[in-house]
Length: 114
Length: 115
Image 1: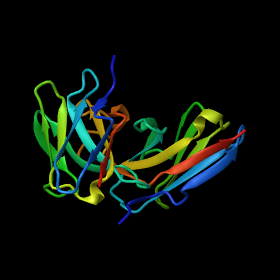
Image 2: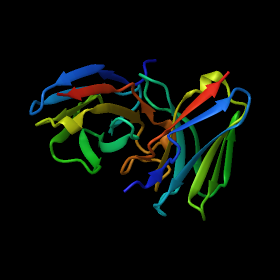
Image 3: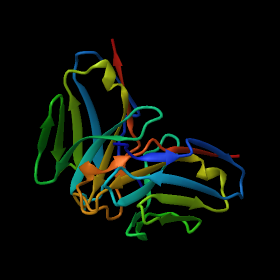
Image 4: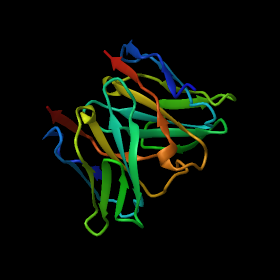
C-alpha cells in the first residue's frame, strides 16, 4: 500500500515563473492538505482540499492555488514565483473527519527559486 | 507571531539517557497537540498526541506531558536510541481532527543521540 507520494522530488525555477507540484494521497484517503516548510522553519499550512474544493486556507497569497481531482490527487500551483517561495512543499492526506494522528505526510518537493 | 515555540534548535543526548524536548504555545484555543519526527528527505511522521483533557500520554519509550496552565508540553524519550536522531516538531490545533485550518507547527528541535 503506497503512502503519500509527491512529484517531482526537486525543482529549480526562475523568479516570475509558474510551478505545479503534484500529490497522490494514501490509498483510501479523500482529503489533501498542503504545507510550506521554509529552511529552519516548521511546516506552515497553505490550504486543504476535500471533494474537489478548497475548504480551508492559511495565510498565503492568491498566487498559491490548488486543485483536487476526482481520484483525490491534488496539485499545488504557484504563480509569479518569488525567491521567498523557495521551500520544501509537503502534502498530507487523511480521511475527512479523522484524527490528526491519522494524517500522513509525503516526502515533499524541494523548490528552489533563483 | 509564533503560536507554537520550540526554543531549542538542537539537543544532544547520550545513548540510553532520557531526551526531553520542550514546546510552548500562546494560543489558548489550542486543544490538541502532536509530536512529529522528521528524517532528512522524508516527510514528518506522527509520533504521539495528547488532548487537553489529559496531562500525560504514553506510548512505549515516548511520553508527552501537557501543562495547560503554563501552556507547555514536553516529549520524553526513554531510553534514547541512535535511531531517535531526527528533527522533532511540536504541532497544535484547536481540534482533534477534521483538518480545519491545518496544524500549527513549531520550528523544530534537532535531536542528536551520541553513542
